[in-house]
Length: 228
Image (cartoon, rainbow, N blue to C red; front, side, top):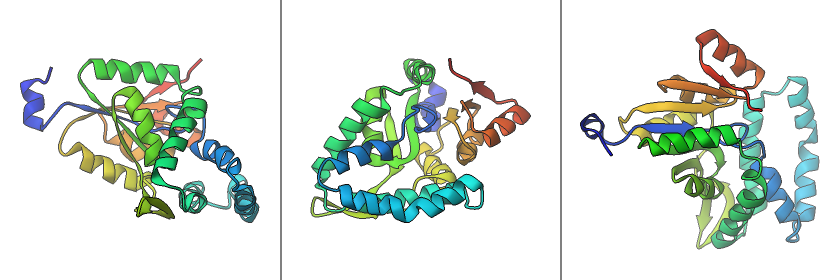
């Protein structure tokens, strides 16, 4: 039930949650890659990986910025989806969620999101993950999705993004617009890229955090979910 205070604020409180590393331990691109390779795109996928191996090595050595690499990866990987019908992408998204992301879900995070929903709050998955995949997960949780939108033309994917990846500062900005003045009751994230989202919430929760976020969470007294 919506309280008078919530009506004044324009709607119920919101809870925001990142996807990869937070809600699930699996990665969307790996699930998509397996299925694309099985549909005759093996050669294209191999060329994609081989061209990026030197940059991957740079990320591991710490000489290439990890977040910039992730953003570039999201944009470049979309090229592998070029020509797919939007309906085919929706089918791929369903399979990736069913067979990869959901089996690797963080049960403790899911339980907390379900509790927030039961308390009348809106659950918003806010992630750099492609929108079709995020929407499948959001439906499972009875929430909404705010992800990276794939450009389409005449019912097919163009291989480009409609906008820059929904990560880092862009994630914080898109979340702020989605809130439209409502209260961000809690936020869940696992990396420093989620800092803005966590800072904007009344309760920041670091989920199995990467080293940088762990240090920040301890310094600021944020709750840490360690998992089993």
